[in-house]
Image (cartoon, rainbow, N blue to C red; front, side, top):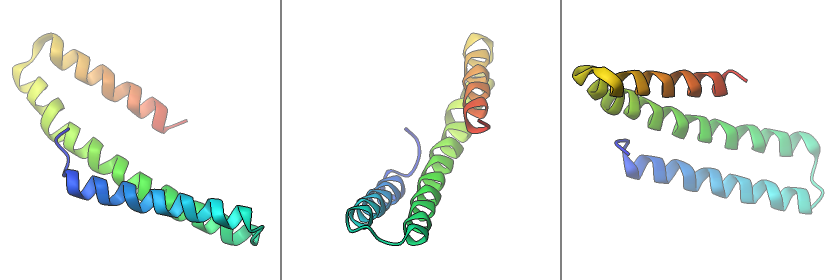
Length: 89
């Protein structure tokens, strides 16, 4: 993985903490909107981590594959199409 490991680790640990906090809120039977807001916050952090990893992949792996061309470039393009399909669902 070419993404900034420290940044990705920090984001994922933040998301983990938020999810643990949401679980505690559910166990404490807290107000639904408060829980939803915390879930949205966790999703936002995961989205940032997702974008960072994907950006690094595009900048390094995909760009490198297209630089060398051939089968590897087609494979990387197909992977990106699959990821875009998953994101759009």
